[in-house]
Image (cartoon, rainbow over all chains, first blue to last red; front, side):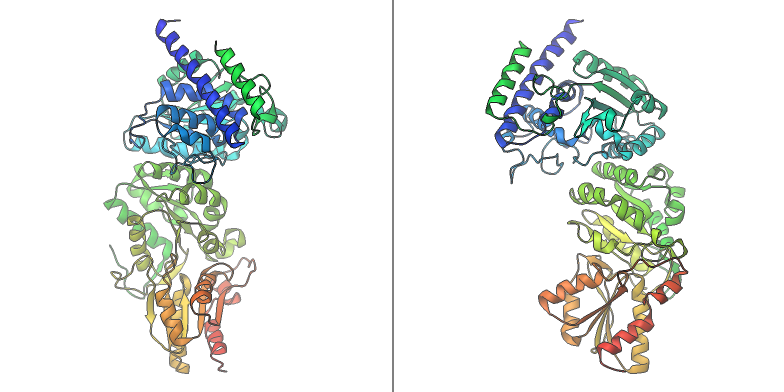
Length: 279
Length: 318
């Protein structure tokens, strides 16, 4: 591994731990938030905000910026911590997440929260909206990318598949999607409820450029995005095998932590585990 | 802006198609997102002129709405093209949560409004759209009464902020307005002046109400204030209240359910400012059926004859 990529990975590991700890504190403080699904995609979110995307917190509405659509909007806690660290808004807002009058809504709002490119929370529409943005970019000759993060349960929405047809029909190679494939949804295992497999084959048959990686491996995330950008005339889907609640032993692969807030003892224990994992 | 001659019979959807071409020429931010309905909504004309700004996502209405949301967020002005029922009912959540909540400028076209799909039957009718769309904050709801006012109102909507929903009939309406310079989104039009009764109409029923008020005047010496409410939301109340305080008798007419539409909007205003007996003419909370458009209007009471009957009842005349 080159020294450059090694340094990048070290930086991203440090930031991911920091964001997870902030997320824990945030959710503990208000007594609500989706931790399991925030932790499973933390590596992806960190990679996008701190390495991959062309963005500027001082200019959040720059027309040429890369866009990020958190289609699985309930994972907003981890995104809010990333935005706070980047300086889109004052960090103190994190501790009033979901409280009345606060800029951090329970699900992302593009009008209220600086740095949020699109409202989300209603699962399944992110890809349709990304199609519109991708088309707008090509129409105006702009070179920015639109990144979208989906939940795996969300892929059960019919809307995703009609949008997937459009993405490849219009050759939207400026769209890069990630599926946070942690295998769990609210009522159980994804593939026991509504089987997605063979998922890679499905997107390939829709004429997408498809990759399958370990969603907690920074090297794979960074290299796969670079590889995707070389493939023209096809939208890109990166299926990321992840673990819900990754990094905290009692949360990992545990549906109970989909939307549960930890108590003080659990928060303390979780922070200790994250710091230990990092060191 | 090309104006149609007065009293000409123009299908409203044809006027929409022509307006899209006109306005697409002067504003290159305008795009059309279609879900395979351009040939029937007449957005096809836009496609024929500006193929690079026309996008068909196929039979996928929510996908259409999503693409419009994305385009609007990047500074384009999307028109969506589909029948009112599939646009409003199937996409309602996205219209509310993504377009209206963020006040995005999207012009939502609801074609084949009311019963104008005729033989296609209730799956293709929309008698709930005014009710649903006016309940959404930030949404403007426009139901033009003729092809000339439709044109001007489209131009106004493009100039305004936020989203607008247009209710467009499939069928012909007779041109009422030859001078459109005074037509303004959000401002009612007083078509006739009278002291005996107030008739408030919208969309296709304005022409029908005009016929009724002409007959009432000629045969019964009843003079009606006739108000064309093309913009149901935001509802301009001054014209309505001035008229009602004069006549103290009100009828509303709409090709829509009596629940939640123009009649309900007027009732809300009157209850607050000037409680008055009001008769709402519309579809009486029933699903209707397939049939020729004119037969349907006849059966479900959307006729000048019924307006006249109700007016006489209100005025206690036999």
